[in-house]
Length: 404
Ligand SMILES: [Zn+2]
Figure 1 (tube, rainbow, N blue to C red):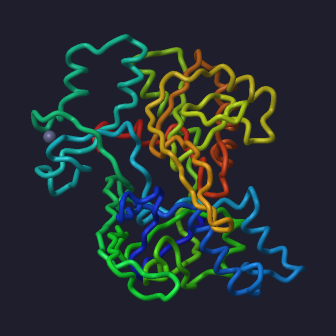
Figure 2 (figure 1 turned 90 degrees about the vertical axis):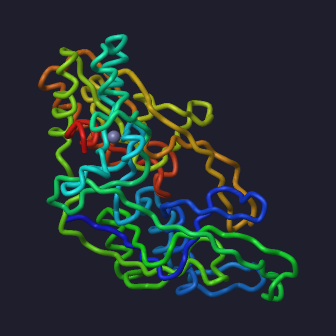
């Protein structure tokens, strides 16, 4: 059994992540955990609080501790909601430059399949180069003579039992509006702006843990709330559903670890590997609070409390071998202070890191899988309750079928 929060768009939604250029506001193509958390918190305050005209804030009754339990807790994590609950395509994915996309059973002409390059990249790193056959395989489509190109976006299984993948497409459009004068709520003379929106009637899904599900279900299930930019202009109306799913969010990490290593073993024996794939952006700080753009073993363990010394010893055998990553500047708006927050740097979702050690014994492997499981459940880095820091070890995308 799993738990999820559905965001069903009843009107166009604009989630702006950076300051607009000129009079153009762009939206991102997912709904960040932070946005969901903020919108639910505001809805809660409107329903349970009273408006203090002087301080211009909502005030809750003194005996209310529910608000802080849900919205100011490190363990209540609001994850990002992605289109139809799909996952972010890892940065290691590539596809045919001209007939790009996941294979379809009845349409081999239009979609030449998606390949993951992680194992090949590691092989290159460790063996110092490709032979010609390998290089052709890496650079060329194979179904046609076209070169391979990066493949981005969202993906998921067509159904829980399906073996084939499909792309999750987010429909967006631009809308031109005349700006409103905020005081008079009337059109401001001579001011036009263009706003990019996510189209209505699409559904975004975020995973929930049981504790948060239990809190949110009685408060927000089937509620209409408002999210994102330009709420007063008729944008941002969404229906919230808090649901159980038949499918389990759990997966067998031990199977994933063995499968990933099985694929690596074909060309390099007597080493052990694990990969870290970012399901959301990750914010990491070094010892003197500077933002980091790479992951170390220390970053993996410092959010988890109960790692045994033996588990720690196994983990410390690993070193970062390779990172395939991009970074992003996070600019946020502090609604309470009505000021921009200081920018932070995140490692972007879809980034992939590979760690390697000398070969492990069976008991060491068992220990490692236990430790990795704990880290995966907790997440890594800062602001995990706002949707940051979600990772997955040895994701099947890197070791399943060569062409997907
Ligand atoms: Zn092709």
